[in-house]
Image (cartoon, rainbow, N blue to C red; front, side, top):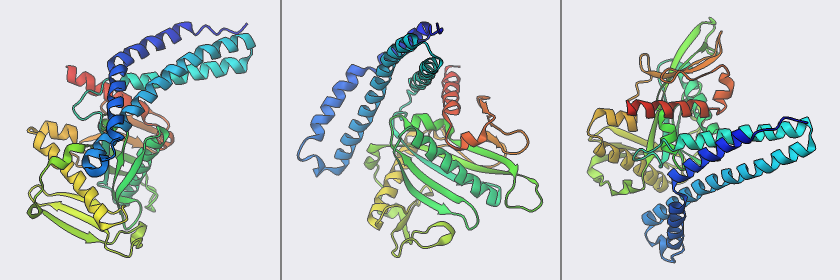
Amino acid sequence: MLDLDFSARIRAIRSTYADIAAVTDLPKLDREIAELEQQAAAPDLWDDPAAAQKVTSGLSHRQARVKRLRAVEQRIDDLEVLVELAQEADDADSEAEAAAELAAIEAVVQDLEVQTMLSGEYDERAAVVTIRSGAGGDDATDFAEMLLRMYLRWAEQHDYPTKMLDTSYAEGAGIKSATFEIDAPYAFGTLSVEAGTHRLARISPFGSADKRQTSFAGVEVIPLLEEATEVDVPETDIRVDVYRSSGPGGQSVNTTDSAVRITHLPTGIVVSMQNEKSQIQNRAAAMRVLQTRLLLLQREEEAAKKKELAGSITASWGDQIRSYFLYGQQLVKDLRTGHESSQPDTVFNGDLDGFIAAGIRWRSLSKDQ
């Protein structure tokens, strides 16, 4: 007879899930969904596009949270049935299947538990992530592209919708910068712990001396705020430049001046957009991100708050949050939490949950001290 006494672990999962459900307040979410569904069904909804966007986005985010929570509850119920069937079958394959599902559910519940620590003012928002190459030449621009792929793969693994907003390609390898949106509940709160300087150490594939090269890239994460449209940006405060979108190596991918770069003259904030089809769409998207950043600045009276929300990132020595070693000892190590992985390939392929969870716990403990 196989030893399939998973009852203690299943009870622990149910107990943790009950705490998560209580903190999340599912009945309240159900009421909010019902109200938003009524608003979304109004025939004049899109007479006010900004309000319509707020309604549909709020509805989508709440539905996704409820769906995920109830899916986990159903998996726990199904797990108990699976364990019973495995006990009846009394074979190694059935036991392995039940054990694997138990471990998978434990991981999902752990992720949900970490999410309950996200209680910041903007944590539940979608996120706009910008990656910029720092010191290190071609290795730095290549590293920036590696980080871009890493975050996009992470989002893909979680079924989080992403949208590229702007990409500036380097003359050699990789990218100078890239900006993308992740439209998922708590995307900002989750990814905000990734903001900072990332360091890569490896034998450079771009040199002939087989010497170790250290390069840097900066990651900025800001929340996407629907109410950003409330920020008044006078036309006299901005400079708008239009240019042709381009692909890798400068190859033209657009025969019209559809890309837009907006510079906010009082603050020096620059936002570029080139991934929409028209200049009007790119300008609207750029203004939305600019207004978000300006709204944050209005609410950030202290430099510490500014760094927490958008990051003060130099992408050079002295302020890195994580190091990636791709020579000798293969290792990725977070310098704040101590969390590490000896499999850099899997990390660059999107396996970031361990680092993110450790970062959220570290931040939560830091606030309590």
